[in-house]
Image 1 (cartoon, rainbow, N blue to C red):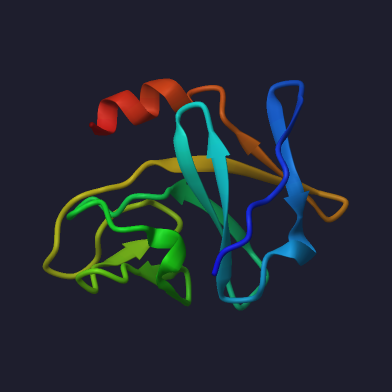
Image 2: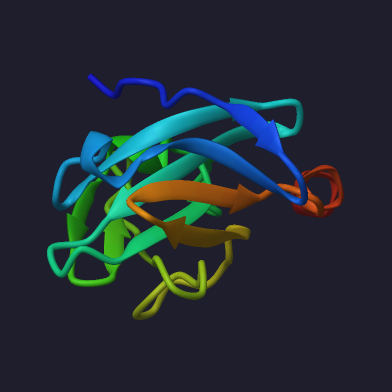
Length: 122
């Protein structure tokens, strides 16, 4: 089960928690006014954030399997790039990428465009 990261507004970036709170090859969910954001940590320690909805049928990407810089949706096995949000292979579609800043072990998300991103994806 995914734990929620704590959200705190801090200037243009939103502080959501510590990198150590995200397991390697795992995720956490941040609930925002514009919907859920999945924050992932790849095996190499890089942190990524996507809208928590697969472009296929809206599956919760945060519950998928992280491999390399991709996540496999738990509903229909679509593979989504954590870097671009694009579906891989023969599948087509895209979920929104959220900007990530990691500073002193703290994860910040750029949610400034989030309402527009969520509306554009509906």
